[in-house]
Length: 570
Ligand SMILES: [Fe+2]
Ligand SMILES: [Fe+2]
Image (cartoon, rainbow, N blue to C red; front, top):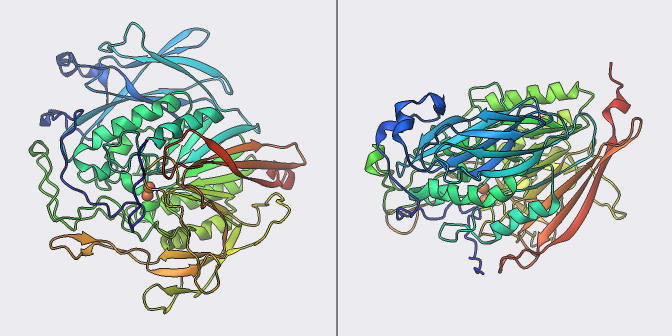
């Protein structure tokens, strides 16, 4: 088993050197003829182009996502090495049904590889029902026995269900930066708990730290998660390591081409979305839009990053970073507010759970820390509309907050000068729970960091105020754009610029950075309470040696009155 590397100062590996790398075994370079980025077209209509491809159309990297309504719609997506001919899904219902897939491609802006992805959207499915399916194409090597699996649709209305979550997964192929064998065990862990679906909280595979082989890293990721993601939806949010040079204005073309996600009605499809399962509204956000931290693709130097000549893209100079704060010009926050406002008038929604990658509340000592950008843009909305849970990744550890509402002003200090800084320190509503009683999240939002999927950089050391011994957080309150570093021609980025007492921090796992959150919803009965039981299982010992052993670390229960109890419908 691989020994973990010591995490670097900028914990999320944002400052890991991007070195011009080899072209991997899986990389091939195509001409410019198929460079229609994100162009959606039915592959059945491609005529001569499709006929010209006799290469391998075998489906791989097969993964499910929810459609617009998880009770009736699921999207089956996959990738093939070459263009698939007549790519399709066979759905086994009472009568067999064939659903043709839509092709979306992109050509990687660094190595010029064209990636062929396929998406078959199944609609009109019966709720709470298991379906068997297979995926194939005319040039599927396994056409005689195509890949098949089964999934279950979500229940309708108030019903019990389970979901699981973690972020920062990477791949089991240790040839790639930040990959680790633990990521294979993490996929198996999801299957152990058999959730209805899984939330994958960003930093999927760290392809942008392997810039000359990005599609190959994605392939190793996709083939690793297939063992679970072909059996139940894995709902992702984008993280900073999905931001890739040469792949679109925000660098998300690879991510967006591979995933079909519920619509958001804006000009940024796929980056944020909502879906509802039972009485829970899930809201998935793209926090790179609001955070101060610069942690996307970055060339540290001294050499430039040299794209393949086939891309026609120029070298990317040392010191260049893809910093996308503010990319939606407020569109995402407006959508969030509209979505929350609509939920506040919907008596079928008992719970609101937000998924995002970066953290508003993190006291990791050697990771990224808390980002004031989220506190400014979104925490007031979470307060106003009563978001119950926020589930994140980014720091590769486990941390749980007390329920928080509002903030304390001017209580932080500059990490260098000690001057007062307004970090908008979240204010805990309670700060003890000796009887381990259920938390009522109608009085405050609980934030969870579940950043220990499988990546090779555990960050489970936490800040402590040297004077008081109390938890202390590092807070990013301004951008950290690249600056010249010591070695000639190289660049680095500063860490968090401020400190605050982490008065909001309730529990931190100091024994391992790895684990999985298991969430069980009990809808309760009319006139009563509904609850969510959260069990966090951690992979003890995985900081040094990958392990399949996930043990219970803690269980937390949330309980609140059902919305239909408080305000009867009608
Ligand atoms: Fe990460
Ligand atoms: Fe991250």
